[in-house]
Image (cartoon, rainbow, N blue to C red; front, top):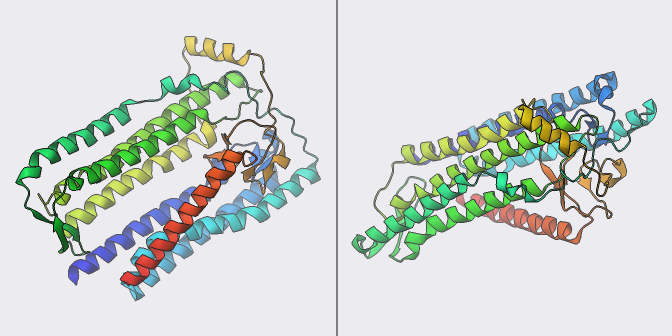
Length: 394
C-alpha cells in the first residue's frame, strides 16, 4: 500500500508540473507571438503600443493565469480526496487548460477584429511572402542529423546487447509489474522481448525526425520591411528548433532503452528509482520547448542574431531575389476564428500559425483535411481508451 501511495504521489506531482508548464506557456503566448498579430488578426507593427491592444493581451493573460491556478488547486484537492485519481489528472489537466485557452481566445479574436476596424488599420501584404528563399525545400542539409544517428545507434546497441544475453535468460520471465513494482504477469521468453523497447524507441525517433523535416518545409513569414533580419531569424530559429527536437528524441530514446534490463529480467528497479527516473526524464523533455518559446518567440521573431559579414552578404542577396509567386497569407479572411488556415490558392500544406510558435496546416488542401482527421481520431481514441483504463484502475 505504501508503494502504491508513492506511485499516486509521483503521478500527481508529474501532472502538476506538466500543468504548471502548460499554463505558463499558454499565459504568455500573446507576448511571444509576432507584434503584427493580435489574437489571429493582423495589425500594423506600430499598433502594439495601442491601449486597446495592450488591454486585450492583459485580459487574456490574467484569465489564463487564473485558470492555471484553479486547475492546479482543483487537481490538488481531488488528489487529496481521491489519491487514485492521479492518472485522470495527468490526462485531463492540460486538456482543460487548452479548452480554457480556446474559450478565451475566440471572444478576444472578435474584439481584435473590431479594434482593427474601429481604428481603420490597413495592413497590406507586407508580412508574408513566398520568396525564392522562403520556399526552398533543399535546406534539409542544415538539419542536425547527429542526434538521430546517436539515437539509432543506441537502439542498435540495445538490440545487440539483448541478443547477447538472450540465451542466458530463464525460459519463463516476468512481463509486467504493478504500481508497486511487483511482478504480476509471466510468459515464455521470446525474441520480441529483445526488440520491443528498441522498436518503440525507433518509432519515436522517426516521429521526431518527421517533425524536424516538417519544420524545414513549413513556410515562415518573411518581413519585407527588414528581410535581412527576417531571414537571419528564420535560419537561427530552425537551427535552435532542430536541436531541441533532436535533444527530445535522445531523451525519449534513453527512456525506453533504460527499460531494457527490466524487460529482459536483468534488473528490477525500486519504485523510488523507477518513478524518479521517469520524472527527471519527463522534466528534461518539458523544459527545452518552454525555454525556446520564451526566448525565440513565434518563428524566431524575438531573436537578435549576430551575423558575420559573409552571412549578412548572403542574407542581402536573398532579400533581393525576385518573387516567384506571392501568396497573401496575411489576409484575415483566410484564417477562420483566427486559428485555422484555409486558402485554396496557396499550394503550401504547412504554414506558420497565427498564435504561438507552432506551425499550422492549410485545411483547404485534401491532404490537410486527412491529416487533421487522422490526428483527431487518434487523439479521441487515445483519450477514450485511457479514460476507461484509468477509471477501471480506481
